[in-house]
Each structure stands twice: as C-alpha cells, then as structure tokens.
Length: 230
Image (cartoon, rainbow, N blue to C red):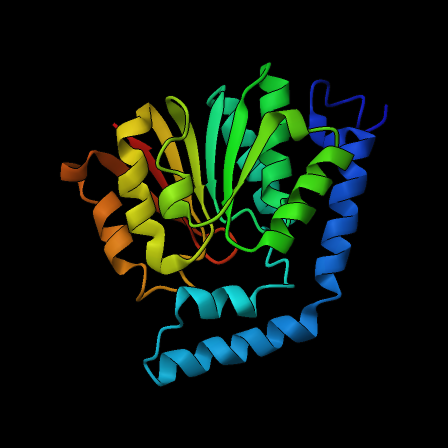
C-alpha cells in the first residue's frame, strides 16, 4: 500500500500540493549562502545591540524563503486538523510554504480561511501564485501591508494563530488578535530560541496565566511557543 493511500484525507499528499512544496523547499535549500550571510548579520546586530528596524529586516529577507521546516509544516497541519480550525491567522506569510500547510488542513477540515499578512509585495505575489498552483487559493486570504493594520479585522473568531514575522511585533500582533481568539484557540510562535532576548516579553506574557493563556516552549526547529487561550 502506498504512503498516499495509507493517509486518506490528507491534502499534503495531493500531487499538486506536494509538487509546490517540494519545489519551494528545494529552492530554499539552494539559498544556504544567503542564510549564512543573514546569520552573520543577526549575530552582529546582537553583539552591537542594534536591533534591525522592520524596513531593514524586510530588505534583508526580500528574496529569502526563511521557511518552516517540513517537520514544522506537518506540525502546523496536524494542529489545525486537531482543532478542526476554520479560521487561521498567519503573521509573516513570506512565499507561502506555511500557508500551504495550513490551507491544506482547512480543506481537509471541510473549509475555512488562512488570513495571512506579508509586507513585501514580491513575496505576496509569489505566495498567491504558489497557493493557486497547489489548488488551495480558495482557502487563503494573503493581505499585503503592515500586519498591525491588515490583521486588525480577521473576519471572525480565530482558531489558530501562527507568528513567524518580525519578532519585535509578536506581542503587539497577539494583543491585536486576542479579542478574536475563541476559547481553546492555539497560538504558535516561531524562532523563540533564535530571538530569545527580543521575545522574552512575549514568552512572559503567554506564560503568565493572568493574561488568559497557558503556554509551553517546544524544542521544534528554532523554538516554538505553544500557547492555548483559556
């Protein structure tokens, strides 16, 4: 029995979805030299105590995927399926790899929408094209612009949030979205270890029950904060 037939109802095994993801992960893999330069720049920023501005970070990442790993993507899919999510919000769409995993879960859940936000116009165009080629565009609404504005109205109760954009804005974006989070909604925040100092206020916020969350840090890729709205 094939792997595809042994996993009925999993859109990640759809040939169109798989083709887009395989191509995108391969393209990301070829960007290793650029990732190394970005790592050096990030270390220099930390040593010199000069956090990059939003515009600087957007420029540095303009042509880079900086994607979730295949394992993270599967994790996003499984969490969305387990929640039977219908409305997901994503901060930092980039080229849409994580968006595809989330949209695939929504299709398998019977419908819904991923409301994404991306500041770089070129990435928005490619993300939308990738979703179209994967056959998942009807399950995604990728909004171009500053997430502090584009995500103010997610369009309804939110089941799942994925934070993977400008790290200095994680807490602000969470506070914007909190009124829309249903009880039991999950918030996943990436790069907790990479930007440990910057994200300390965010982690402190979600790990303090007074703020309405219970949270734990997972050893997944660069650190993933898993929080549940109570």
